[in-house]
Length: 254
Ligand SMILES: [Fe+2]
Ligand SMILES: [Fe+2]
Image (cartoon, rainbow, N blue to C red; front, side, top):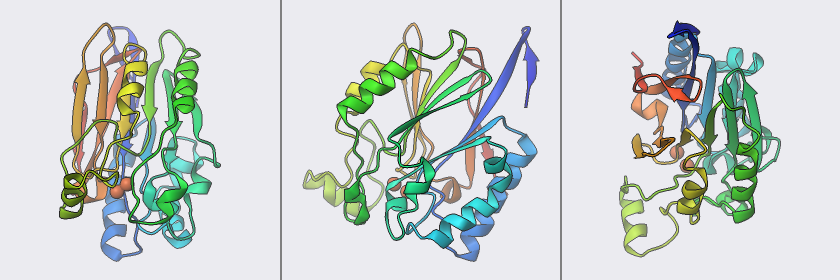
């Protein structure tokens, strides 16, 4: 959707995450309701930051592709793998064509998609993410190619700052200081490299939405989308040039 405001065009990006398609009727209905709201709002770009499937099965991924077909076919949807997508048939491999990082350019938008999953995610007891220093350097270099007026978004599945544990397994893991529930080891380093050069860092993995804001010459907002199916909604960010237009809008699904 395009709006003229103060003589400049504004554009929108919708952030969905952790859909966890599991072939159940209930999950399918939740996802269809998200899709219907996206259709109504006519967003310019849809971003899905991983855990698209519950068990990484091809049938689960096929269901996702059927529901979101109109966005995927039109090139207006970017899908990033999450740890659950490495289970089963490992559908994660189809999402970013096995690349660790890819750049999506759309009018006014410069989006860097990053795969933070790893081979250890083949086992559900090892859900944590991985992000190498050289990938962060590649991200930093890629940002230099963004246009002066581009809104810059970096997106990945795993969280970069410590977030409250959401269930007993995460609480237990945190108590014993295991990696199970931990943020990306180089999360703070990534933030330091992005601050002042990037507008939004979007991720999922944790299912309760959360935001951290780093003010400065160019504010960096680190936003956890949460599970869109569990939360029954998603955020829309409206931007114009490098500026966010107002607060992100939470779109509730019926
Ligand atoms: Fe998840
Ligand atoms: Fe996850």
